[in-house]
Length: 271
Image (cartoon, rainbow, N blue to C red; front, side, top):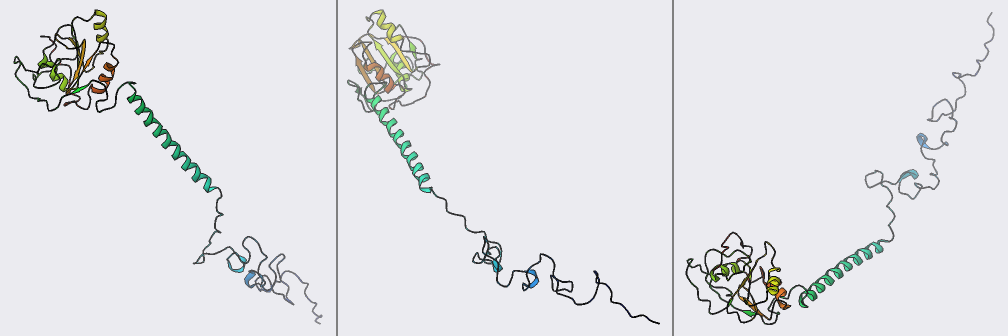
């Protein structure tokens, strides 16, 4: 005899009334799953609550904002404040640099014009004589050149070899010394009758390597005469304040025909 079949207990594989699952399947709603009504577990039909990427942020279903091709587009960065302060600081720095440069130029010009180490170009040292269009040809050694009575000469024809710069206690041959002037040297000729202390003061002006000739000279019109190529300055004595200014202005100065040419390795004798 067959006994009546009893219903199977409800278990994990029990059949019977079924309810839709999280994906519309037969196993019932998953605990904590999305609310019914959202297709495929997406956003609820009413949309998501407002938030950083909520409705109005630019993405569908309250999602992140999207660019023109559907990619994620970050929100625009907030504008930084205080940019005007940076620009003002830069402008202030530029103005400060300009003021320092202008101040330095003014200080240099004032120093050059008040006798502090030199003089401005253009013959602002009182008493300077200028000579232009001086010949520069070489003559054979042993010939005598007429320098029109200028002592020392300030240029003109000269020997092919130059006089070595330095201090001499005898008169020099002008034709050698003029070649040194062409190279930028200053020639200081002094009256042989000067006291020994004055002669030593002149000798102290020279340092090895200087473009400077110092020698006694018969017939000079003043106790000391300084000459460079095309310029000459008669001086009242060794302590005349114009002498250091003349040296600063005309040693290797703008009137030098051959600046940088040697003032050693030539002729080191006297007359």
